[in-house]
Image (cartoon, rainbow, N blue to C red; front, side, top):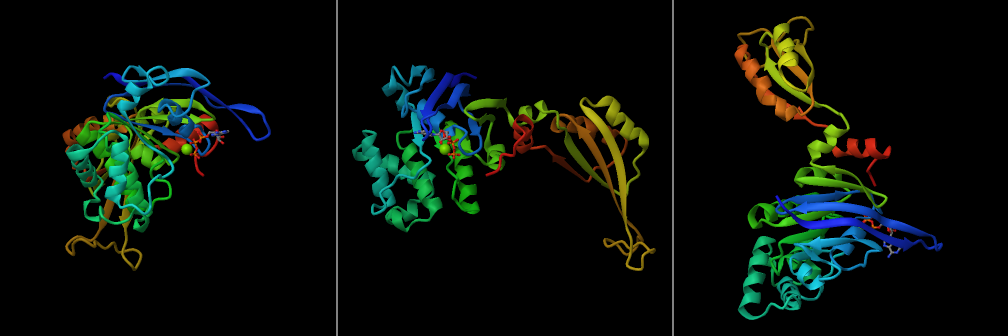
Length: 345
Ligand SMILES: Nc1ncnc2c1ncn2[C@@H]1O[C@H](COP(=O)(O)OP(=O)(O)OP(=O)(O)O)[C@@H](O)[C@H]1O
Ligand SMILES: [Mg+2]
C-alpha cells in the first residue's frame, strides 16, 4: 500500500489570549494509505481541526510539510487540492436554497457546469440519500440531513481523498449511524481514502482501519485499533457457551498449552434452580429437570486470532460450542493508559 498523504513534523503555533505562545499542533508525522479510513481521535482542543486546516491548505504551518499524492500543499496547492474534498466541522450551506441548488452552487465553484454538473449533483444526491428531498430548502432540514448535504458538497468533484472533521457532532444517533455508514461506503464503493476526526472513541473504533490518537498537538499512539490496545497489554476475553456439556480440566490445559497468547482458561457452570429453591427446573423442556449454562472464559492476547485454534481443539475434544463472544478492550483504555486522563467531554 502506498501513502496518499505524507505529513512530516507539522506544527502550528498560536497565541493564547494572554499573549503566551503555544503549539496547537506540535510535530505531527503521519502517513495515510490509499483506500483506508484513518481517524484522528482526541479530546476537544487536541489539535484535530488545526491539523486538518494545515494539510488542506487553509492554514500555513509554523514548520513542517504535508503532501497529497506527492504534491506539496504549500508549494503546489492547486495540484494537491484537486485530489482533496474537505467537509468542515462547521456546516456551511445556504439555508434559503434547496439541497440541489446548494450542490449546484458549490459544484460551479469546482468548475463543474452543464450536463456534467447535473449528472454529478444527481449522483451525489443519490449517494447521500436525499434525492426525494432535493427541492426542499435546506432551512427545513434536520441537523443530520444538513450534515449529509455538507458531505455531498465535499464529494462533488469526486476527490480521491476526503477530510471529515467531526461530522457527527450534534447529530442524533440514527443520523449518526447513517453518516458512519456513508463513510464506510465511500471507502468500499468509491475506493476513497478518508481522514476522519472525532472525539468519540466508539465511532472511531467502529469505522477506522487505523487510528492516530492526538493529545496536546502530538500523536501519542498510532496503529490499528487492535495494535493500540494490544500495545497497552490488555487482553481480550473470549466467552464460550457450552450449555450442560461436561468440560474436562484437560481441555482447559490444552487451550493454555497449545494456543498462542492464551494466559488463562476457566470453566464455570451456572445451574438455574426452580422456584422452590431446591428442585431444578428446565425452562426448555419438561422431560429434563435441570438447566445448566456452562461457560468457558479464555483470556488471550489477540483473541480473534486465537479463536480458530481454540474452536478446533474444542471440536477435537467432542465439545459443541453453542456461542462465542469476543470482548475486546477499547480505545478509551488506550487513551487512559497513555495520558492518565479519560477521553470524555
Ligand atoms: N486561531 C487560533 N488562535 C488561537 N488559538 C487557537 C486558534 N485555533 C485553535 N486554537 C487553539 O488550538 C488548540 C487546538 O484547537 P483545535 O480546534 O485544532 O482542536 P480540536 O482537536 O479540533 O478540538 P474540537 O474537538 O473541540 O474540535 C485549542 O487550544 C484551541 O483553542
Ligand atoms: Mg475541531
